[in-house]
Image (cartoon, rainbow, N blue to C red; front, side, top):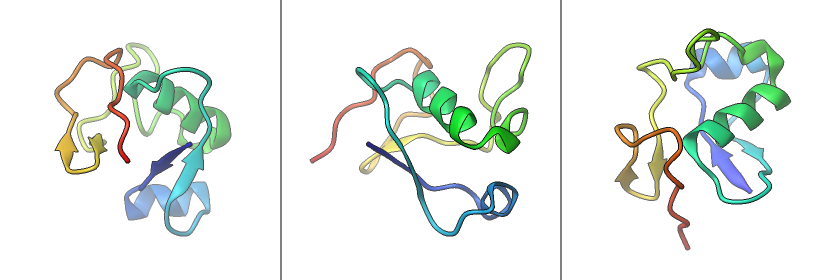
Length: 82
């Protein structure tokens, strides 16, 4: 289970309050998290990443605990936090 904190404007678009959770099969990567997020909230497609290149938008940031992961490859496994 991955917890995702969306910026306010994306929470409104997705019609959610607070954080959302996505389930992933296998090891989480930035790409798999975004895939699951778009599958669960189709209204976010095109807002969190470019639909041609699949690169995340610059305002979307990745963190695991206190560690910033935004500059990592989208295929790098996200570290598990305890």
